[in-house]
Length: 247
Length: 114
Image (cartoon, rainbow over all chains, first blue to last red; front, side, top):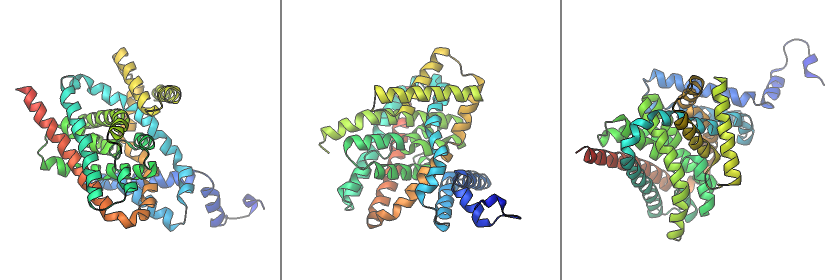
């Protein structure tokens, strides 16, 4: 049967089948949900609790559950957006480069803060999860969670813990960091944009960086620097550390 | 706009090649970032097209996480048995990490200014 020969307005079901067979539906859903998220974020004067990414994630998750679209099917279409994550990571070189001259005198404090933050992230998450009785598979997933998700998954493979679980915790950490950062930074009286941005980037990688850029360009540049450094150093140091500790 | 995108894609491709053949430890995009940074440092300028693409990406970086993050939401029910321990560890850890990083930066930059 050739659907397009049907006279008059085609059956809605046919449109449905047609759209869901192409990447269009997933793309419209993803971009539309993000657009709604941005509108709400702007309307809420960029309040951290109205995080546009969080809103988009919830909207898409609810919609595909309601229409019974399996996640792999959704991802098949949305992978075009996902692919750009790598491209966008490369493009972070530009804001980092622009902030470079200002960073020169600050390299030592930045590296020290990164090491302190990275260690805190691992020790606190692994320690607390153990204390609360999570099993060792789950505890392993926390080790690389503050590193940006694609790097974190690579580290997880190398140290023999679940990459999926690591990605789940990395993305959850990114969202939590983006939402909570302002409150934490205000509480510890961090006032300089570069310090605030760097702290978000260390703790909450790309999702934190996205939040930082939406608040202040300098914070965004430092956040992307922190995320890049954490990714590179984490990829080298975490596997070495795990071997030394016999994890 | 297009020439900036081409430059970024070329560096991404170069990064992927290096990861594949030389440095499997570090993901391609990170190597691409480092290479592009080196390139910019050598040229000592950012051309307008590259700047335009990069600022568009950094403004909407979060959007690119949505497809993967939806999978994460779908995965969460499987963790129900340990939900409390996991949620507590994630929240406490991210709060401590932000606080410790910010405090170390504040203390060290104050010390170096004296």
